[in-house]
Image (cartoon, rainbow, N blue to C red; front, side, top):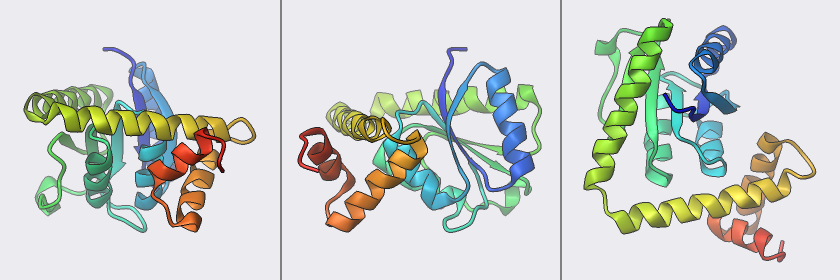
Length: 186
C-alpha cells in the first residue's frame, strides 16, 4: 500500500497511541493528531491529507459530525472508529467515502478498513463534479502553504491554530486569510 498522510482524531490516549502505532506499522504517516472534533475539522483544512481516522465519540463535536465537515470542506477517505457496536451508530450524517471500524482492531482489520475507505472515496470521485474537486484541492493547497509559511516560526499544529485564529479574528474565511498571508498582507 502506498504510504498515506493521515489525520488521527481520538481523545483517548491509549487508543490514539495504539492507532498511531498501527498506522505507522502499515507504513503511513500520521501528520497531525486531534483530541477533539473541532480540532479535527480545523487540522483537516490545514494539512494535505489522504485519510482521516476519526473516533466516533469525541469532545466538542462527534466523530461523525467532524467526518461530515471534513468531507464537505475537502473530500478525503475517512475511517470512523468506535468502541461501541455498529448498531449504536447513527448514519444520518456520514460522509460518502467512509468506513466504520469497531475498536480495538487488529492490524489486518485496520488495513482492511483503510482499503475500503479508499475504495469508497475512489467510487465517490468517479461521480463527483471534477471542477468542484479541483477547486477544493486548489483551496486546500493554498491553505496548506499558508500554514507551512506560519510554521517556520512554530510547530505545524500551532501554525494551523494560528491560521484559524487569524481567520476568526479578521472575520474572513480560512481561504481568504491564507491568501492574505501568502500575499504578505497579513
